[in-house]
Length: 366
Image: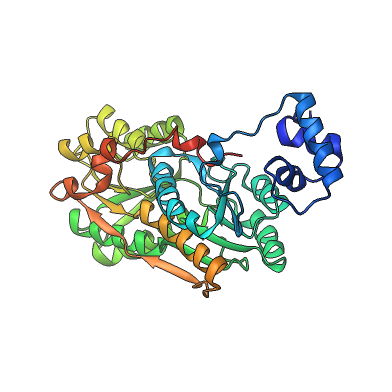
């Protein structure tokens, strides 16, 4: 059954215009006939539609450029930090006259093609995108770039596309670093396993490949006995890890290459193996702190999500306002977090760094 139309979609349908034209009329941005503008405003009044002014907090009256943002809401441990980076930098570049428009998706790889198409319809000048579904997104990105819409991927890539830039911690390096660490933590001949999200996602697959290549080089006779896809689902990740620990009782180590590490920690606890199986996780958030302190997490590979968000906005803004060349890639260096340096990271001070605005997930919404 087709999704019920509401808000600007309903207005566009009733007025027989694009949603970009509706947006221009509602926000008095010009570029359309006065008669069309008045017809749209009349329909808006008829259906009782009012633009969400709070959601346009990062807009300016006359935007010199418009940037669409499509980043997942979940897993919020990572993406909230990425959002904070986007928002912090957006506050700075709004002085250049750049307007930001948000089309979030609920989870990585779910609905990103529809969100991307919608941003293109809004006639944006650039799109910042977490490419969870690279195969389907590639032709859309190529078409957008052909229209002059610059696309900057952040966190995970669509490498076969003609996107302008990618901002990320190189995933193969991330996995390789974790593999080297694991090789130094466990005895020779150890059996280890990988908990991934979705191997169709470029980021998860390359981390898996990097670890798989690195670990045997640093652990003589070491073997990777299983690669599990948890699909970023907490229940699925817990159950698959719980079952793995039963099947492989002598498992020496686990590498979780997504931010969805909490169910893995709980599975280790439920099996009485917390601190006994070496656990290397990915990134850092406040809820991980107790597991570091108890010794459940041995180390984590930090991906600097806040800085990724900042840089993605910065390179896009510089290109749109100053015509600065977009770098093909911006590689951030992965860091190693252990219990001794845990207090140094901004994520451990999350309560102090939360913005005063409404819920991050609703910021920038149209």
